Length: 104
Image 1 (cartoon, one colour):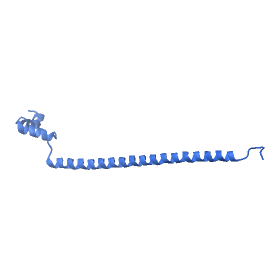
Image 2 (cartoon, helix red, strand yellow; image 1 turned 45 degrees about the horizontal axis):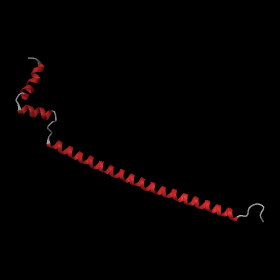
Image 3 (cartoon, helix red, strand yellow; image 1 turned 90 degrees about the horizontal axis):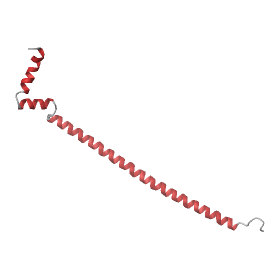
Image 4 (cartoon, one colour; image 1 turned 60 degrees about the horizontal axis):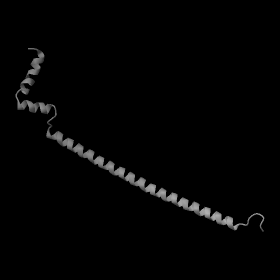
């Protein structure tokens, strides 16, 4: 026998034993995980989920702030248009009241 077959022979014997071999193969390939690993993964999942929810809330707050700022700027534009119309009307009124050249 060669050195390689001497090393692999115990593994081959275990794998050919049937159900035990399948179980060991599944465990070593991480198809089966110990309970402690599963708990750690659940805790990590929960932590990531909390971070995701916080991020969603922060983005919603940002969207709400942008919407409010947009409404305020729209109101400011409308106010400026009203003031511009008022100034135009006052100037027109002033021009009508002033005597023209050559009158007097």
